[in-house]
Image 1: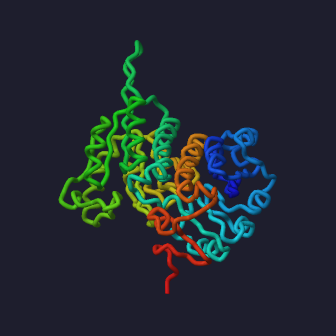
Image 2: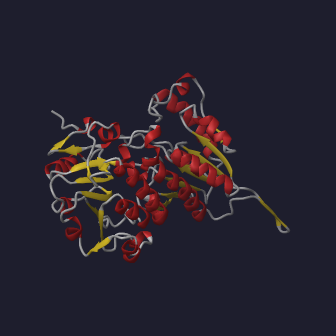
Image 3: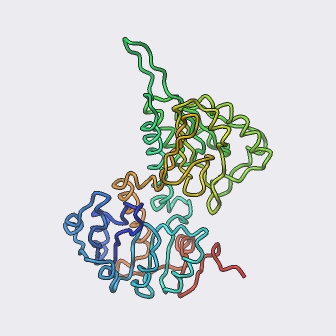
Length: 379
C-alpha cells in the first residue's frame, strides 16, 4: 500500500498532513509513504526528517501520486491534483464541502473516494480523530495571543512602585472548544474573563474555568442545543434580548473574541457596528469566524481593520495554521487514527469498511458519485 503526502498548494496553508511520528506508524503497518518535497517546510519539518522516519521524498506531486492508493492532505485537492490521482484512490482531508458542490462533483468524476475529516461524528470512539476539536483548541489559544498582541496594554493586574495596572477585561462569545481554550488561556494570562453561549450546558464549564457566564437564561435558552452538541439557531426575539444584554457588556471590555459557527451555515452576527462603536479606543475584537462571513460587523478576512473610534477588528484566516507545527502534529495524529481503521493489518492493504459508522459519516464520494446524503445534487 502506497501513501502520498502532498505539499499544500493554498498559499495560506502552512500545515502538513503527516509528520515523522505518523510516517513511522504507517510504515509499521506495512505501508510505503511518499512525501512531496517541501510538504512540511512551513510546519518546521524538513525533508530530511521524513527520510529519517523512513519516507521516500518525491520531487513533484505527480511523482508522489503515481500509484498511490491513499492520499493525505490538509485541504481538499484542487483540479490539478485530482487529474494526477489514480482512479479508486482514497483521499482524506479537511474537505470544506458546504457550499462547494461543484468541487465535490469534480472529485466524484475523478473517481476518487473522498473523506471529509471535519464530518467525523462526535462519539467516544472518534474523539482521537476529531480534527474540529484539535484545530479549534489551538485557534482559541492563538486568538487570545493575537488579541493581546494588538492590545496596547498588559493583560494581568500589576502592582508596581509606579502604581497599579488594572487587569484587562476579556469577553469570549461562543463557548465551544475554541471558546473554552480562549477562556483558559486568558485566565492564565491574568485577565478578568467573561463568556457567553446559547447552550445552557456551557455555563458550568465557563464557571469551572474561573470566568463569569453572561446570557439571557429564559426557556428558549434551556432548549438551545442539538443532540450533536452544537448550538441551535435562536429566534429573533431571543437574539434581540441577548443583543441588549451583550451590548452593555461589550462597551466595558478591552478584548472580545468571537468563536460562533453553525455547521453548513454562515456565521451568526453577534457584534453590530453600534457595539463596536461603543468600545473604548484601543480595544480589540478577534473574529475566529471571519472565513464564514464573520461574527463581527466590519471584520474582513485576512485583515486587521481599525475603525473610526480606534478599535481594532482582527480577521486572521486559518488561525490554527498560525501554529503550523503544533497544528500539523495534532492533525496528523487525527488522520492516522482514522486511516488505521481502513487498513487490513494482516494483508497490509487498504480495506475500507464501507458499513462502518465513521466511514459512512465522512465519505463524500465513491464510484464516481457524490454519496453523502447532505450533499446530494438537487433535483
